[in-house]
Length: 302
Image (cartoon, rainbow, N blue to C red; front, top):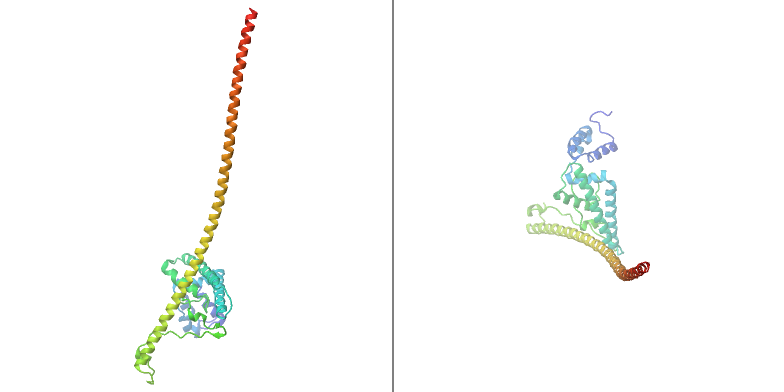
């Protein structure tokens, strides 16, 4: 047994850190602090590990508890990126199909995460669904199963590193919080207050444009998914209508056959009634002849 305060071997410690993110959320802080006390020189590093918010914790559990769902989502995300890369490179790719497949995997993953939340006794209302949904759409992350915050799907920056017909997409400019005119000016005094103010406005414009782009991309993705869903509904309704028409045609044929059979039966009934009437007339005639013969016999006998 290692002495208290002696840091474990790095791989072993990494596994213990990994284990923190697999725990029920309410156990994270106590387990992290205990591990920090036992980790020697790395104790401060362990103590600094952030407790995930509920939404990030739930997505982590998708990785630990529902790996097939997680892997399917990551595979669909990579396929979508490859499709975008092909189009940017001047090749042919079905981006819509890839986006539809990715959104379907996102929906399946969301259902699985909500189940995990319910099983863990956490509320899974609408306010929880949105951060989970945006995080799932932003995957893959650098540290699967160890998220410490929720994520936002990337916009232009998600394509960084891809080639547009041989030309690399540049990294987007970092969007920093708005600065004051005084803090924007360099210490050397080479930038005027007016220029610093213009720089701040430019940064704000970049941030606003990035948010607008992300929102537009998310809206387009949702609309494409809705289009695919309604197209599927139309296809299913068309198939149901075709089956109903077939059933109606069969029913109409059965009605016609029944009407024909009923007409034939009515004719047979009428013919039978005529024959029955004729038979009754014959019986009456026979009875009359019998009575006449009986009278003649009785007269002769007397």
